[in-house]
Amino acid sequence: MHCDNYCLYNKVERKNLKLKNDLRRCRFEHQEISQQELANAVGVTRLTIHSIEKGKFNPSVLLALKIARFFKKPIDKIFYLEEVK
Amino acid sequence: MKRVLKISNAAALILCLISIAGLVFTNTFFLMLRDKIVNMGNVEIFLDKFSIPVAIVYFIFIFFHLSAMFTLILQLNFFKRDNFLRAFLFFTGTVSLLMLVGDFALLSDISKEYIFGMPGEFNILFASQALHFIFYVLMAVLLVLSRKSVRKQNEEIVLKDDSIFINAQYIGIMSGISGLILISVFSFLSLTIYPLPSWAMDAGVIVVSLVAVIPYVLIVLYWLIIKMNERITEWYDEKQYQDITRASLVTLVASVIIMALVFVAQYFVSSLDILNEIWLPFYIFLILLLFSASTLYFNKKGPDLDSMGRNIDISKRNKNLGLAVLITGYMTLVFWLLTIFLGIEIGVGRESYTAMGFFGLLMVASGILFLLSLIFNILESRENKRISKGLILTIVSFPPVAFSYLAIVIKALTEGH
Image (cartoon, rainbow over all chains, first blue to last red; front, side, top):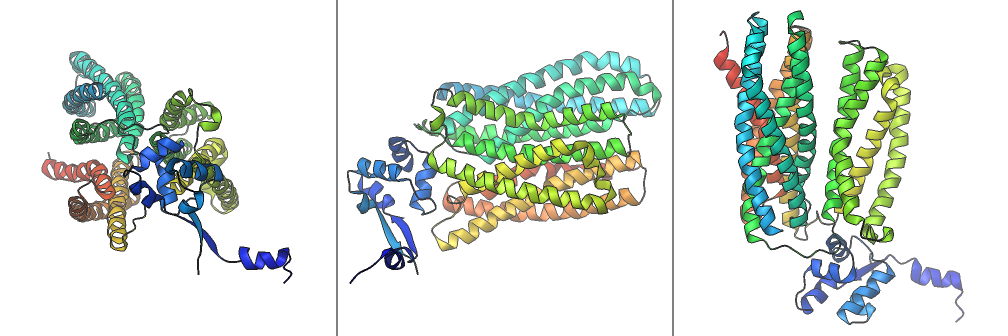
């Protein structure tokens, strides 16, 4: 069935999606490194890592890729979208 | 670094204890001097006898201040965590250091003007002494508390530091609030009780504004020195950029609304006309306050939340209790100074009784809140095995609360003598 841009927008964008992450779990699986060590590795402050973990801050694509590269995991194994009701 | 900090901590603590004793000495001297002036005693002989010891004590004060500021900078570098007490001490320490220079000028004026009656400079001198007292006592508390943590903790490697960034916001808030209060009080007094010529008022507003803003300028300069080695694009990380952007928007909208409200209110409240004279420093301090407060809010909003539902309520309640003690404690001190000031300048009357009433209410409230906050926060700190934010706020509130109760006890003991 044909689906135009408006239809796609209704299907995907109008859902209340939120960026979630498994950063905390990844840190513990990765020799239990601290937020500060991860922050040093990707060049941000500890507070930024803390805010990402708490879902208070969405990282840029660049930072998300840096984090994924650090953990040697595909980006969608760490960051994913979740529908919020 | 750790060794330097240990030595600096110990040196500052020794100088701090000597300075507290020195403060008792200088205050006794000032009280005796005031008595001599009131009772028409031989002030000149008294001044000749004590001027050199007082000058020596003041040099010790200056050494202590410099050593304390150096220790605070070292601690900021070592601990890599923002700390309200440290930021508060950086602010009060800088203002107190500037007031030491002011004390010399005030004493020089007093020694020249006492023949014409009781100089008004005594009021400012005693306010300055209260500030020194708060700084010395809290600095002693910080030095004692941090000794153990310096010994235990190893220096953490932090490539992108955020503690100076957050401390700068704390100091920005303090500078903003004190600047707004100081310029408003100064211009109100110089337009009503002590009428000054226009040039003297402008000069006074500049001096008062500089005293309030210098701590912020110093911390920003220190932050800039640290950032010199980095590229400008790396001065902030992406969250800090986002926080600053949001804070700028809040500042823009809020400042326009507040200034518009003040502009309209001037038509109805004639006492707000003083803002015509001080609109520029008023606007600058308002912007500083709004920007620092909103940046801090956006930057810290995440870390303040705890994932455990029960802990959110308890730690929030205890923090709010600490904040309430802090506000009522310092308000008590302000009303105590106001009561004395009105009693001296206007005499006993409706104004001084009103101020006294507020002082009494605030003193009782601050005492009760202090005890409650202390108990709840000690329990929370023991449970979590770390000092709670509410406990830090309660400790910071101790000097004004103790000071006001001490003042009442001394007044009760010396009544009639």
